[in-house]
Amino acid sequence: MNQQTYRKITDGIRRLENGEKIVQFINSIATKIVYMAYVVGIIILFDEKNKGLARFVAVTAISFILVSIVRRFINSERPYTMYDFKPIIEKNKRGESMPSRHVFSAFIIGMAFLYIGEIPLGIIVFVCGLIIAIVRVISGVHFPKDVIVGALVGILCGVVGFFTF
Image 1 (cartoon, one colour):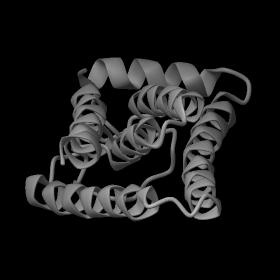
Image 2 (cartoon, helix red, strand yellow):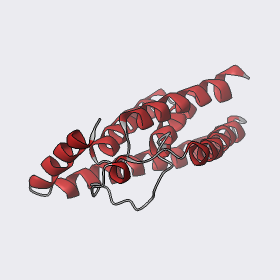
Image 3 (tube, helix red, strand yellow):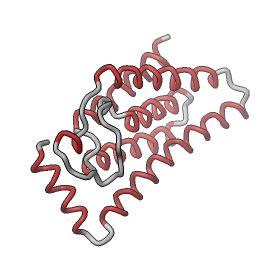
């Protein structure tokens, strides 16, 4: 997406009555659902005294740390800094745009739920991940490639961490 497209989308959202607040609310709710689901997964495994708890936490945590390091190394510019506009989701950070850590987190957590056999929770988290991806692009805080790479890396880390070893 280019500067004109981002400005057109963000200006369009701002012209809607409460457009910014609605988009920010959707982002907030979808993100909170993902992180609350993660806690629910830990509680489920803890209550079941399941050995999967250590892997559930370790794979997601280690993957998150690795993605954070890679983001710093890549240090990809964000749309709102590249094209000089105010994003819908308030953000002051420069760089570290790819991969999207929000989207990555949703997809690695979704994979964690597939690993423990909680398919409905996994589907809910994946849907929230898609919503987060869309909202973060239309808000101007990520490019489409950032959220696509975030989702793919989350899935890949999940496959390797949960289903390969």
